[in-house]
Image (cartoon, rainbow, N blue to C red; front, side, top):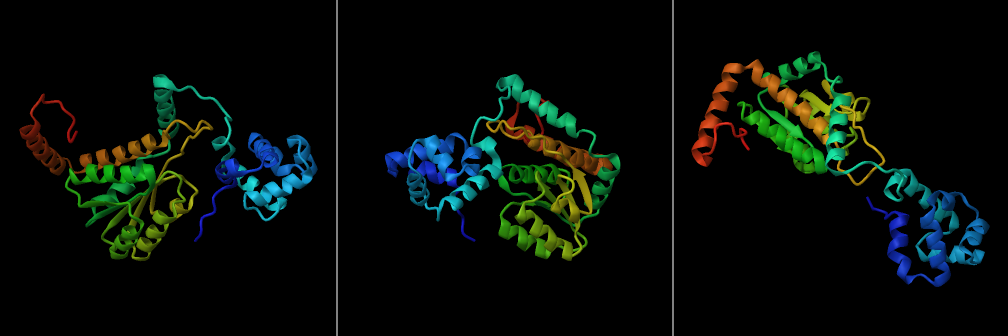
Length: 288
């Protein structure tokens, strides 16, 4: 599948090679994408103070078939998100702003996961021969590893996968005695979804931490729902990963409590091994 660079990037890359009249058109387009996508040739020419022929030459110069193709590709860029092109909104940043956004995301999601859903998930995980964890991308990859780290210390055979090919391979080895945890903040990740569909064919128990009413949520046996609370302010990392981490902590805690004797012994061994290695005070985080 070929990848077509969006028209905004093409204009930026080509700007230095454009003629003076074409540069005026480029500036008009980038200044107001909505206007450029809907204006007629004459309106664009008038706004840029160039001839109508310059509009056509500009379209060809940035590798569009014609002006209609140019406007279509501008509309595509707008559809992806104007907030990534212009300053749509201003949001408080700094230390308090970051903490407030995390707190808001957690509070917004705190009532979505019920004890009944957690009990269903822990029941499937408790009885699993092995647990697979799938997650890709900048957030779910790290959190899949976090899930693995939380589970192995409790004595569960857990393995995290983030490579798309390895996920498909692992999913093909799953059977009804295994459990699969799928992580996706949006619920549309094709790599996670397709691998989960493979696992579904082999009757694996599928638990998803993702957004409700999405393709991944639909195929899960147990859904621990989350609602990403994103804003138009693009420069701050997504607070949704804290929501997913909270769901992971809930599962890990419930599993530990469900088998207290086993969990206590595993954690005791970990603590003893770590303290011999690193020293320090007794109340250091377990696993650091």
